[in-house]
Amino acid sequence: MEPFDDVYFMKKALQQAEVAFEKGEVPVGAIIVFKNKIIAKAYNLTETLNDVTAHAEMQAYTSASDFLGGKYLKECTLYVTLEPCQMCAGASYWAQIGKIVYGASEPKLGFSVLKTKLHPKTEVISGVLENECGELLKKFFSEKRDL
Image 1: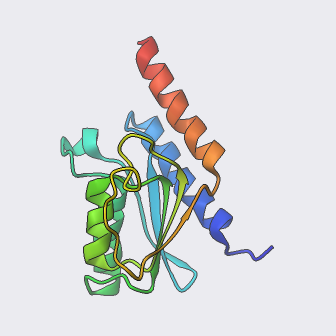
Image 2: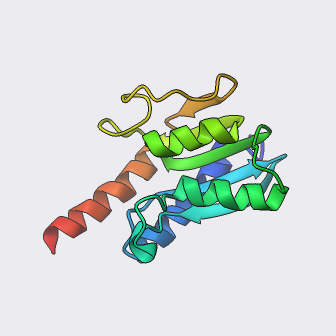
């Protein structure tokens, strides 16, 4: 197994989701990789920032663009623990992200079910560490319901 494969990087995104979980945020984590190097790490900050647009992916796009000094992420891969929503998928179109790898599917609000258009050159891989990503989300919402 290659040390820097999709599973390796999804585990890094899952670590970000765990930080979000600990902070009471919906546990979605994202990282962006450029040439096998993590250039952005992020997690949901919607509660912390009181901002509905502060999804993990949006934070990661901004951080990666800042790191690279440009707005296009053509040679980058987004690893995110939950299938991107319409907003985050739309932003990926404008950033021209090269590849999106996600863990758990989002059957109600995910970009695939809503038929959100991605950039034509964006490659998508789904289901990487799907169970681990999904379990963290289930645990979060289960605990919220019990309060």
